Image (cartoon, helix red, strand yellow):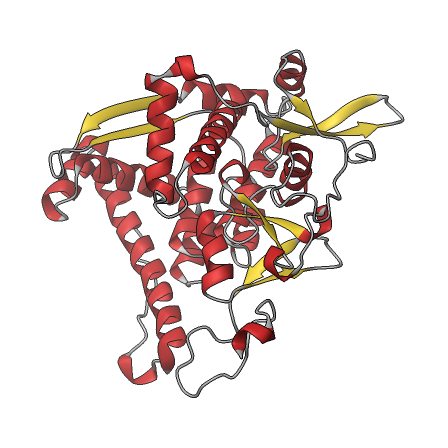
Length: 386
């Protein structure tokens, strides 16, 4: 094993302030991660994978699942020189490196291209880059990747020894998972509408109740709503649909698109939706199904954190209480937490005119080390401040 060249920054040269300290912690975490991975990989090489897992459990007092995860990740990372180097230098965060390593175990990748992307992209952006590259390099329009993901499906229900609560863990391929998420989101909205506004459940409680009702009381049926949004480009020269994908951007093999197009509960989303009324003005406050489809295609996910669009809300950029209209350009997809950030913590929705994409940004210098800020969020009606 070649020892990595790691030099932790001494306390005397630490950058001042919480932001600088957090940056240093991130760099140190990356350096320690590669050292840990190289050590575990060497243990697995000298003995075997089972021995390395046992060592991790004994020395680090890890759970069996954590030890298994760490050793497998270490073995994958051992064969990725560029990723390990970028991780050791602090240029790539640990989670980004694990994402690249996992992708390398699923099929061919262009490691250097992904490492360069990992240096500037957020985790969610990198995940999309990885999916796109895997699809392009698969050699079979991504069918093998889709089939492999279907094979890896799993579900486990167990009772926690700590809390006595039952825990459900499950993994599904992107198509199945997207449809389940849609059904669950529809049921959550149904429960929300039936609640007493003064005694609302938390978002997590409502999600749990929605899942329980779908499983235990299927006779209640599911609410009519958006089941699955598929997007494809039309190649006029070839007269066929190409670049098929789920609304969140996950590439879809052409064969799967053909199968899904035959199902009755698939809603086609087209780029030129002149026949749909996407400008509702003040006629209604909640977005229509047509607007939700259009927003899912445009935003793909929560514009703040990348959470599943099925589990998100349609937020008025110019707030409804301030006269904002339920028009497509004035709506944006946000999850529950990001919605709270906007309404309670003065985060702002910004629109990039060049890309057409929206994002959520915190108030200027959300955690200042010194001084105060007199900035006021622009969505607050000044009359209400007096």
